[in-house]
Structures are given as structure tokens and as C-alpha cells.
Image 1 (cartoon, rainbow, N blue to C red):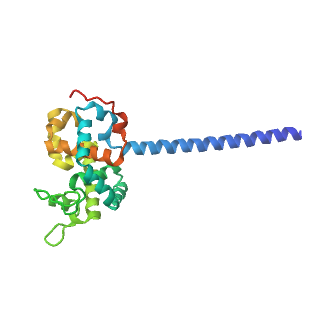
Image 2 (tube, one colour):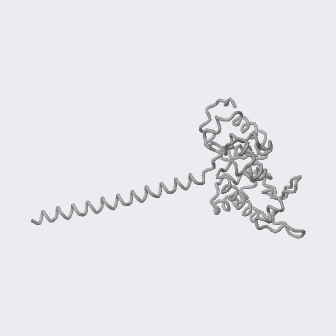
Image 3 (cartoon, rainbow, N blue to C red):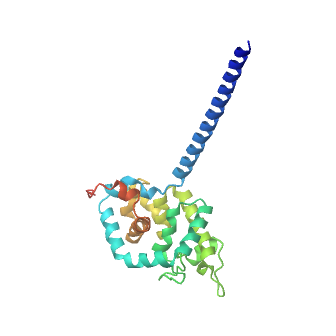
Length: 237
């Protein structure tokens, strides 16, 4: 009798441990799924692996561009770590892909004083009207486009809005460069919202802008999705 009760107790304990372990495993599995979904939602679509080998000349462009920019990029790696870290932190708080921090290098070489011929200013090369729409002060006494933290928050808002408009990071980056209007026109002309199908209808500067961002990430992060999947051949178009 006593032995029978002991066996029952052992069985109950075994079932309890088994159920607890299963619950923990299910929780772990659910957490992994949530993390994977989060990564997927914030994935930088312009860097899809097939992009690198399926579009004519892209890998060659990236290689040549990074050779040309090697000295500058190496200098930025050594001197601008704090700025990149700050940008990364702000973008993360806005749930933006970390790769977007390299846009500051493409836009201005991370120079706060950088000015374009059309009046864009600062690390993020914001136009006065865009900057004010995003909450920055721009007047005869103060220009917050020159303030790294404030202008980065404004750029984060703008990039987030552009992504919500186009639901594609490559299109959002293109729109950051040339404005949403030309991107909408390119979508209409191409009959597609796939960046690589419509890029021919975008301004040349904008096409280069997207490729430069891809190249910059490859330089700063080394081996990436692009180089992992590159098969060594050039596409035919």
C-alpha cells in the first residue's frame, strides 16, 4: 500500500515537472517567435539577399564606391563613433532599422556644417521647410538642423513617416533624397512599387543615393547579407 502511494506521488511529481518544462519551452518558443517577428518587421528591405546578384552592376558599383571612399570611411570609423552611437540609440528608440544610421554618412559625411546648393543643411541635410514641419526651429537666430540630437530625432520622424507612406525602406530612402512626389510618379510609370522595377524612372542622384547607402553598410559592417549571398556573377539587366 505504502509502495503504491509512493509510486503515485512520484508519478504526480514527474507529471508536474514535465508540464512545467513544457510550459517553459512553449514560453521560450513564443518569445523566439516574437523576437523573429520584430526583426522581420524592422528588416531593411533594400538589403534582401537576392538584390545583390540579381540586379546588373550593383555589386560592382558597391565595390568601386567603397574603394573610392575607403580613406574617408576609415577616418569616420575612427573619429565619429560617438555620433554613430547616438544616432543608433535615437533610431532604436523610434524602432527604425539600425542600418539607417549610415544615411548620415551618405548625406553629409557626418558634417554638421554641410550645406547643399539648394539650402539643405546639417548632418541630415534637411530643407528649412521640412525641418520646421518636423518641429525644428529654423530662423535668423537659431537653426536646429545644426544640432545633432535634435536633427536626428527630426530625421527619424521623417524616415518613419516615409516608411509608413511607401511600406518599403528602399522607396522611403529614395523619397528622403528626392521627395515623395517623384517616387509616386515612378511607381505610376513602372506600374510597380518594387524599387528595382521603378528605379529607372527616378532621378539619377536618387538611384545613386540608395546604392551608396547599401555600399556604406557593407563597408562598415563587413560581411553582410549581400556578400553572403553574392554568387559572383553580374545580372543581365
